[in-house]
Image (cartoon, rainbow, N blue to C red; front, side):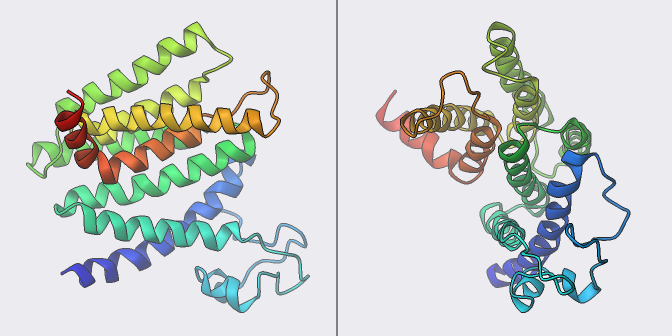
Amino acid sequence: MTWLRIAVAFPLGLVFGSFLTVVTYRVPKGESLVAPRSRCPVCGTRLRNTDNIPIVSWLLLRGRCRSCGARISPMYPLTELATAGLFAAAALTFDRVWVAVMMAPFLGLMVVLAVIDIRHRIIPNRLVYPSLLAFGGYILIVGLAGGGLDVIRAAIGTLAYGGALLVVAFISPRGMGMGDVKLAALIGLVLGSLGLRYVTVAAAAGILLGGVGAIVALIAGASRKKAIPFGPFLAAGALVAAFLAPQISSVYLRYVT
């Protein structure tokens, strides 16, 4: 069953990751995700179907456009590979199928939101709002059907995590954007459906990683007045919690409290 899960999840993750590369490129520009078909951003030539095979096409083309020879960023295959790995990890980590089905795309979404925030310093409402509706509806249906998701804790996680950052945003608007607040609400919603300890670990890990990242940036010469995107750290905290929350909370309860 382990190998079967990997055999199903990994290629699905590659396909989803390929879609996320389109999302990463088009959403910040306000472009449609449906049309036109994928084109070379340099020469505008429409890509062949064989040029859109995840990872394989990039390798066969040696990272260059078939028509003009322009360099294709390695971020494309890396995003596809990372998403496939997260899909496989979700399939192995969560025993209940309906939980794994939710967590796999959620983890992929964390990757794309982090990349967009790093590149453009935004967390697009165009991604967050539909995700809140989609995951919220899924949690409600699966939770009521007894599929292993907790609707009440999902609501608490949304209000607790999103609400806490909302307060921070009001107190220090330069230090916390509303995009971060909405992302925290999404993380609280999804991870809260697994249990509130997941939300707690995600928040703690996100804040810790954000603090370390800020210190590293300052040491590297970044200006104190220059805002550092917090979305990637929130996303990283969500990834840590998704896979390690039970172990971290267990160690905390055993040795700290």
